[in-house]
Image 1 (cartoon, one colour):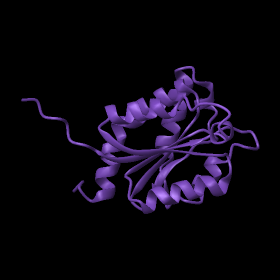
Image 2 (image 1 turned 45 degrees about the vertical axis):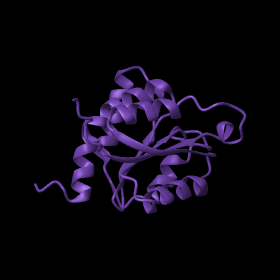
Image 3 (image 1 turned 60 degrees about the vertical axis):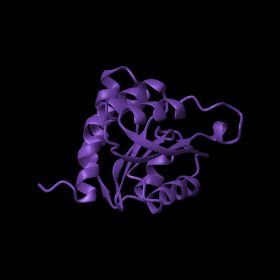
Length: 166
């Protein structure tokens, strides 16, 4: 009998996209993030879609933190246009930034040809006991960002939960 691998934790995905939130376009990154999180042994609580507005983004992040998820992945709103406010909204929620992970995601994305990942202002950090990660919205940026993030997440969550005794 084959045993299932242990679950790392619970995750929530926040899609930041005006057109998706208004029903003008289908979400094409949420299902990809769910698939990649499940492959990394996370239980995905939900995908939440919000417009590119600071208050809506902060509310989604705060709800996830209060709800006790271990990981929140936001997708979108990380560029340089006036509507790209995800990093700004996230900064107001984080207790402690983890700039090394954000820089690794940018560098890896750019090396893989995901220009939006390389130009992303996305942040990574901790709010309460929740790891919050901003990813750029292209499928290439999501795939590469998750590949960079996945090996690090279990360690961060273990530290946050007090299970890492180092």
